[in-house]
Image (cartoon, rainbow, N blue to C red):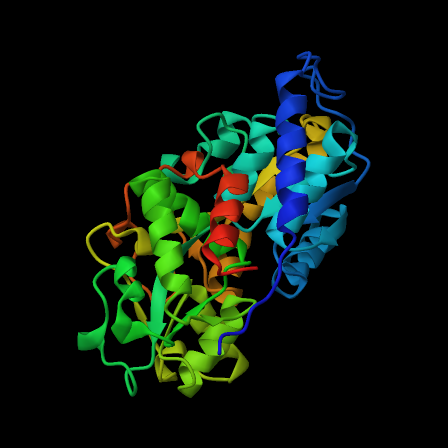
Amino acid sequence: MRRVLRGPYTALMTALLAASVAACGDSGDVPAGASGTAAPSDKKITVYSGRSENLVKPLLETFSQQTGITVETRYAGTSAMATQLLEEGDKSPADVFFAQDAGALGAVAKAGLFAPQPSEVTGKVPDAYRAKSGEWVGVTARARVLVHNPETTPQADLPKSVFELTDAKWKGKVGVAPTNASFQAFVTAVTVQHGAARAQEFLKGLAANDPQIRDGNAKIMEEVESGKIAVGLINHYYLGELAKEQGKSPEALKSRLHFFPGGDSGALVNIAGVGVLKRAAQDADVRTFVDYLLGAEGQKYFVEKTFEYPVVAGVPAPSFVPALDSLNVPKVDLNDIDDLAATVKLIKDSGLVP
Protein backbone atom coordinates (compact mmCIF):
# COMPACT_ATOMS: atom_id res chain seq x y z
CA MET A 1 0.00 0.00 0.00
CA ARG A 2 1.39 3.40 -0.90
CA ARG A 3 1.79 6.19 1.61
CA VAL A 4 -0.08 9.36 0.76
CA LEU A 5 0.71 12.82 2.08
CA ARG A 6 -1.25 16.03 1.69
CA GLY A 7 0.05 19.45 0.58
CA PRO A 8 -1.24 23.06 0.64
CA TYR A 9 -2.62 22.93 -2.89
CA THR A 10 -5.77 25.02 -2.48
CA ALA A 11 -3.91 27.84 -0.75
CA LEU A 12 -1.25 27.88 -3.44
CA MET A 13 -3.68 28.03 -6.34
CA THR A 14 -5.75 30.73 -4.64
CA ALA A 15 -2.66 32.84 -4.02
CA LEU A 16 -1.46 32.43 -7.60
CA LEU A 17 -4.82 33.49 -8.98
CA ALA A 18 -5.07 36.52 -6.70
CA ALA A 19 -1.52 37.60 -7.51
CA SER A 20 -2.17 37.25 -11.22
CA VAL A 21 -5.19 39.54 -11.01
CA ALA A 22 -3.24 42.06 -8.95
CA ALA A 23 -0.36 42.07 -11.44
CA CYS A 24 -2.76 42.78 -14.31
CA GLY A 25 -3.95 45.87 -12.49
CA ASP A 26 -0.45 47.13 -11.61
CA SER A 27 -0.23 50.87 -12.11
CA GLY A 28 3.45 50.66 -12.97
CA ASP A 29 4.51 52.91 -10.08
CA VAL A 30 8.20 52.81 -9.28
CA PRO A 31 8.75 51.00 -5.95
CA ALA A 32 10.46 52.71 -3.07
CA GLY A 33 14.22 52.60 -3.44
CA ALA A 34 14.04 51.75 -7.17
CA SER A 35 14.65 55.19 -8.64
CA GLY A 36 18.17 54.31 -9.70
CA THR A 37 19.91 55.53 -6.55
CA ALA A 38 21.24 52.90 -4.16
CA ALA A 39 19.45 52.81 -0.84
CA PRO A 40 21.69 53.40 2.18
CA SER A 41 22.96 50.31 3.96
CA ASP A 42 21.30 49.43 7.25
CA LYS A 43 23.26 46.17 7.52
CA LYS A 44 20.12 44.01 7.58
CA ILE A 45 18.21 42.02 4.98
CA THR A 46 15.20 39.71 5.11
CA VAL A 47 15.36 36.47 3.13
CA TYR A 48 12.41 34.20 2.48
CA SER A 49 14.04 30.82 2.00
CA GLY A 50 12.41 27.88 0.26
CA ARG A 51 15.68 26.08 0.86
CA SER A 52 15.89 24.13 4.10
CA GLU A 53 17.51 25.69 7.15
CA ASN A 54 20.02 22.89 7.67
CA LEU A 55 21.35 23.41 4.14
CA VAL A 56 21.76 27.17 3.95
CA LYS A 57 21.95 28.50 7.51
CA PRO A 58 25.72 27.87 7.86
CA LEU A 59 26.37 29.84 4.67
CA LEU A 60 24.16 32.72 5.78
CA GLU A 61 25.94 32.84 9.13
CA THR A 62 29.32 32.99 7.39
CA PHE A 63 28.04 35.78 5.15
CA SER A 64 26.93 37.78 8.20
CA GLN A 65 30.25 37.25 9.95
CA GLN A 66 32.20 38.45 6.94
CA THR A 67 30.04 41.42 5.97
CA GLY A 68 28.39 42.52 9.20
CA ILE A 69 25.01 42.25 7.46
CA THR A 70 22.34 40.54 9.57
CA VAL A 71 20.21 38.06 7.63
CA GLU A 72 16.72 37.60 9.03
CA THR A 73 15.51 34.37 7.45
CA ARG A 74 12.08 32.80 7.23
CA TYR A 75 12.14 29.13 6.24
CA ALA A 76 9.41 27.03 4.63
CA GLY A 77 9.00 24.79 1.60
CA THR A 78 9.50 26.61 -1.69
CA SER A 79 5.82 26.29 -2.66
CA ALA A 80 4.70 27.53 0.76
CA MET A 81 7.14 30.45 0.65
CA ALA A 82 5.98 31.40 -2.85
CA THR A 83 2.39 31.26 -1.61
CA GLN A 84 3.22 33.60 1.27
CA LEU A 85 4.90 36.10 -1.06
CA LEU A 86 1.94 36.04 -3.43
CA GLU A 87 -0.48 36.59 -0.57
CA GLU A 88 1.58 39.45 0.90
CA GLY A 89 2.17 41.12 -2.44
CA ASP A 90 3.95 44.48 -2.30
CA LYS A 91 3.42 44.59 1.47
CA SER A 92 5.84 41.71 2.01
CA PRO A 93 8.77 42.44 4.34
CA ALA A 94 10.97 40.16 2.21
CA ASP A 95 13.97 41.55 0.35
CA VAL A 96 15.02 38.29 -1.31
CA PHE A 97 13.31 35.01 -2.22
CA PHE A 98 15.79 32.11 -2.22
CA ALA A 99 13.85 29.36 -3.96
CA GLN A 100 14.46 25.70 -4.62
CA ASP A 101 13.37 25.83 -8.24
CA ALA A 102 12.78 28.07 -11.25
CA GLY A 103 9.04 27.36 -11.30
CA ALA A 104 8.41 29.09 -7.97
CA LEU A 105 10.63 32.01 -8.96
CA GLY A 106 8.77 32.32 -12.25
CA ALA A 107 5.38 32.30 -10.51
CA VAL A 108 6.43 35.16 -8.21
CA ALA A 109 8.01 37.04 -11.12
CA LYS A 110 4.79 36.65 -13.15
CA ALA A 111 2.93 38.36 -10.29
CA GLY A 112 5.15 41.40 -10.77
CA LEU A 113 6.89 41.23 -7.39
CA PHE A 114 10.54 41.04 -8.51
CA ALA A 115 12.82 43.78 -9.78
CA PRO A 116 15.19 43.00 -12.69
CA GLN A 117 18.72 42.43 -11.44
CA PRO A 118 21.61 44.27 -13.09
CA SER A 119 23.51 42.72 -15.97
CA GLU A 120 26.68 42.63 -13.87
CA VAL A 121 24.86 40.04 -11.71
CA THR A 122 22.93 38.05 -14.29
CA GLY A 123 25.88 37.99 -16.68
CA LYS A 124 27.76 35.71 -14.30
CA VAL A 125 25.29 32.89 -15.01
CA PRO A 126 24.64 31.09 -18.33
CA ASP A 127 21.48 32.12 -20.19
CA ALA A 128 19.82 28.75 -19.51
CA TYR A 129 19.92 29.32 -15.76
CA ARG A 130 18.48 32.83 -15.43
CA ALA A 131 15.32 34.71 -16.31
CA LYS A 132 15.29 36.41 -19.69
CA SER A 133 13.88 39.45 -17.91
CA GLY A 134 16.65 39.38 -15.29
CA GLU A 135 14.04 39.02 -12.54
CA TRP A 136 15.65 35.91 -11.10
CA VAL A 137 19.05 34.30 -11.36
CA GLY A 138 20.20 30.76 -10.70
CA VAL A 139 22.61 30.13 -7.85
CA THR A 140 23.10 26.38 -8.31
CA ALA A 141 21.90 23.69 -10.69
CA ARG A 142 20.42 20.30 -9.89
CA ALA A 143 19.82 17.39 -12.22
CA ARG A 144 16.79 15.13 -12.01
CA VAL A 145 17.89 11.50 -11.93
CA LEU A 146 16.65 8.01 -11.21
CA VAL A 147 18.54 6.59 -8.24
CA HIS A 148 18.88 2.81 -8.05
CA ASN A 149 20.66 0.13 -6.06
CA PRO A 150 22.54 -2.12 -8.51
CA GLU A 151 22.21 -5.06 -6.09
CA THR A 152 18.46 -5.09 -6.65
CA THR A 153 18.11 -3.15 -9.92
CA PRO A 154 21.03 -3.54 -12.35
CA GLN A 155 21.92 -0.75 -14.77
CA ALA A 156 20.85 -2.93 -17.72
CA ASP A 157 17.27 -3.06 -16.38
CA LEU A 158 16.83 0.69 -16.04
CA PRO A 159 14.38 2.58 -18.26
CA LYS A 160 15.62 4.80 -21.06
CA SER A 161 12.78 7.25 -20.44
CA VAL A 162 10.99 8.46 -17.32
CA PHE A 163 7.71 7.62 -19.08
CA GLU A 164 8.57 3.91 -18.88
CA LEU A 165 8.03 4.04 -15.11
CA THR A 166 4.31 3.58 -15.72
CA ASP A 167 4.99 0.10 -17.15
CA ALA A 168 3.80 -2.92 -15.16
CA LYS A 169 7.39 -4.06 -14.48
CA TRP A 170 7.79 -1.02 -12.17
CA LYS A 171 4.59 -1.57 -10.21
CA GLY A 172 5.21 -0.78 -6.54
CA LYS A 173 8.89 -0.11 -7.15
CA VAL A 174 9.17 3.64 -7.83
CA GLY A 175 9.68 6.23 -5.10
CA VAL A 176 8.20 9.68 -5.78
CA ALA A 177 7.62 12.85 -3.75
CA PRO A 178 4.67 14.62 -5.43
CA THR A 179 4.42 17.43 -2.85
CA ASN A 180 8.08 18.34 -3.38
CA ALA A 181 8.83 21.49 -5.40
CA SER A 182 11.42 19.70 -7.56
CA PHE A 183 8.89 17.05 -8.59
CA GLN A 184 6.36 19.76 -9.37
CA ALA A 185 8.91 21.61 -11.53
CA PHE A 186 9.66 18.36 -13.36
CA VAL A 187 5.95 17.83 -14.09
CA THR A 188 5.70 21.41 -15.36
CA ALA A 189 8.61 20.71 -17.67
CA VAL A 190 6.83 17.60 -18.99
CA THR A 191 3.82 19.81 -19.76
CA VAL A 192 5.98 22.39 -21.53
CA GLN A 193 7.81 19.75 -23.56
CA HIS A 194 4.93 17.39 -24.39
CA GLY A 195 1.66 19.12 -23.51
CA ALA A 196 -0.79 18.87 -20.62
CA ALA A 197 -2.49 15.74 -21.98
CA ARG A 198 0.80 13.82 -22.01
CA ALA A 199 1.67 15.02 -18.52
CA GLN A 200 -1.76 13.98 -17.25
CA GLU A 201 -1.42 10.56 -18.87
CA PHE A 202 1.98 10.05 -17.26
CA LEU A 203 0.84 11.13 -13.80
CA LYS A 204 -2.26 8.95 -13.87
CA GLY A 205 -0.21 6.00 -15.09
CA LEU A 206 2.28 6.57 -12.31
CA ALA A 207 -0.49 6.85 -9.70
CA ALA A 208 -2.07 3.61 -10.94
CA ASN A 209 1.25 1.79 -10.72
CA ASP A 210 1.32 1.71 -6.89
CA PRO A 211 4.18 4.22 -6.40
CA GLN A 212 6.02 4.51 -3.12
CA ILE A 213 5.02 8.04 -2.11
CA ARG A 214 7.24 9.86 0.35
CA ASP A 215 7.34 13.42 1.63
CA GLY A 216 10.78 14.22 0.23
CA ASN A 217 13.74 13.09 -1.81
CA ALA A 218 15.93 12.29 1.20
CA LYS A 219 13.63 9.51 2.38
CA ILE A 220 13.52 8.03 -1.11
CA MET A 221 17.30 8.09 -1.28
CA GLU A 222 17.60 6.31 2.07
CA GLU A 223 15.14 3.59 1.12
CA VAL A 224 16.76 2.92 -2.25
CA GLU A 225 20.13 2.59 -0.51
CA SER A 226 18.65 0.13 2.00
CA GLY A 227 16.90 -1.88 -0.73
CA LYS A 228 13.38 -1.05 0.47
CA ILE A 229 12.58 0.77 -2.78
CA ALA A 230 13.95 -0.32 -6.14
CA VAL A 231 14.31 3.11 -7.78
CA GLY A 232 13.41 6.70 -7.03
CA LEU A 233 12.98 10.02 -8.81
CA ILE A 234 15.17 12.54 -6.99
CA ASN A 235 17.71 15.32 -7.50
CA HIS A 236 21.29 14.20 -7.94
CA TYR A 237 22.73 15.74 -4.78
CA TYR A 238 20.78 13.55 -2.36
CA LEU A 239 23.31 10.80 -3.00
CA GLY A 240 26.07 13.10 -1.78
CA GLU A 241 24.03 14.13 1.25
CA LEU A 242 23.39 10.53 2.31
CA ALA A 243 27.07 9.68 1.90
CA LYS A 244 27.97 12.65 4.10
CA GLU A 245 25.50 11.53 6.78
CA GLN A 246 27.01 8.04 6.78
CA GLY A 247 30.60 9.30 6.81
CA LYS A 248 31.37 7.77 3.42
CA SER A 249 32.39 8.98 0.00
CA PRO A 250 29.51 9.00 -2.54
CA GLU A 251 31.32 6.27 -4.46
CA ALA A 252 31.21 4.03 -1.36
CA LEU A 253 27.42 3.91 -1.30
CA LYS A 254 25.56 1.05 -2.95
CA SER A 255 23.27 3.39 -4.86
CA ARG A 256 24.04 4.89 -8.24
CA LEU A 257 22.55 7.71 -10.29
CA HIS A 258 20.93 7.09 -13.66
CA PHE A 259 20.83 10.12 -15.97
CA PHE A 260 18.08 9.61 -18.54
CA PRO A 261 19.54 9.87 -22.07
CA GLY A 262 18.35 11.53 -25.25
CA GLY A 263 16.99 14.77 -23.83
CA ASP A 264 14.32 12.90 -21.88
CA SER A 265 12.05 14.92 -19.57
CA GLY A 266 13.40 12.89 -16.66
CA ALA A 267 16.80 14.54 -17.17
CA LEU A 268 15.62 18.08 -16.43
CA VAL A 269 18.27 20.38 -14.98
CA ASN A 270 16.61 22.95 -12.73
CA ILE A 271 18.09 25.65 -10.55
CA ALA A 272 17.91 26.97 -7.06
CA GLY A 273 17.99 30.73 -7.34
CA VAL A 274 17.10 34.14 -6.04
CA GLY A 275 14.72 36.93 -6.92
CA VAL A 276 14.98 40.41 -5.42
CA LEU A 277 11.72 42.02 -4.35
CA LYS A 278 10.97 45.45 -5.81
CA ARG A 279 11.22 47.13 -2.42
CA ALA A 280 14.88 46.06 -2.26
CA ALA A 281 15.79 46.80 -5.86
CA GLN A 282 18.49 49.32 -4.94
CA ASP A 283 19.45 47.95 -1.53
CA ALA A 284 23.24 47.75 -1.32
CA ASP A 285 23.12 44.99 1.30
CA VAL A 286 20.91 42.84 -0.92
CA ARG A 287 23.32 43.30 -3.81
CA THR A 288 26.19 42.24 -1.55
CA PHE A 289 24.22 39.11 -0.63
CA VAL A 290 23.48 38.11 -4.22
CA ASP A 291 27.09 38.74 -5.23
CA TYR A 292 28.23 36.52 -2.36
CA LEU A 293 26.01 33.64 -3.48
CA LEU A 294 27.47 33.91 -6.98
CA GLY A 295 31.02 34.40 -5.81
CA ALA A 296 33.67 31.72 -5.49
CA GLU A 297 33.07 31.16 -1.77
CA GLY A 298 29.30 30.81 -2.12
CA GLN A 299 29.60 28.52 -5.13
CA LYS A 300 32.19 26.29 -3.46
CA TYR A 301 29.98 26.01 -0.40
CA PHE A 302 27.14 24.53 -2.43
CA VAL A 303 29.46 22.12 -4.26
CA GLU A 304 31.21 20.91 -1.12
CA LYS A 305 28.38 21.05 1.42
CA THR A 306 25.21 20.41 -0.58
CA PHE A 307 26.73 18.68 -3.66
CA GLU A 308 24.94 20.88 -6.20
CA TYR A 309 26.30 22.02 -9.53
CA PRO A 310 27.89 25.49 -9.57
CA VAL A 311 26.54 27.88 -12.23
CA VAL A 312 29.50 30.24 -12.28
CA ALA A 313 32.59 29.40 -14.33
CA GLY A 314 35.76 28.33 -12.59
CA VAL A 315 34.25 26.24 -9.79
CA PRO A 316 34.43 22.43 -10.32
CA ALA A 317 31.33 20.24 -9.95
CA PRO A 318 31.04 17.44 -7.34
CA SER A 319 33.26 14.48 -8.15
CA PHE A 320 30.48 11.88 -8.44
CA VAL A 321 28.50 13.51 -11.28
CA PRO A 322 29.23 14.24 -14.95
CA ALA A 323 30.05 17.80 -15.97
CA LEU A 324 26.96 19.99 -16.22
CA ASP A 325 27.58 20.88 -19.86
CA SER A 326 27.87 17.18 -20.76
CA LEU A 327 24.32 16.31 -19.71
CA ASN A 328 21.77 15.62 -22.43
CA VAL A 329 18.94 17.71 -21.03
CA PRO A 330 15.39 18.18 -22.38
CA LYS A 331 14.67 21.18 -24.57
CA VAL A 332 12.79 23.10 -21.91
CA ASP A 333 13.30 26.78 -21.15
CA LEU A 334 13.27 27.28 -17.39
CA ASN A 335 11.50 30.58 -18.03
CA ASP A 336 8.49 28.55 -19.18
CA ILE A 337 8.00 26.37 -16.09
CA ASP A 338 6.19 29.03 -14.09
CA ASP A 339 2.60 27.73 -14.30
CA LEU A 340 2.68 26.22 -10.83
CA ALA A 341 -1.07 26.30 -10.28
CA ALA A 342 -1.78 24.17 -13.35
CA THR A 343 0.87 21.66 -12.29
CA VAL A 344 -0.49 21.37 -8.77
CA LYS A 345 -3.94 20.69 -10.21
CA LEU A 346 -2.58 18.02 -12.57
CA ILE A 347 -0.84 16.22 -9.70
CA LYS A 348 -3.93 16.41 -7.50
CA ASP A 349 -6.23 15.22 -10.28
CA SER A 350 -3.95 12.28 -11.05
CA GLY A 351 -4.53 10.73 -7.64
CA LEU A 352 -0.91 10.98 -6.52
CA VAL A 353 -2.13 13.38 -3.83
CA PRO A 354 -5.75 13.36 -2.57
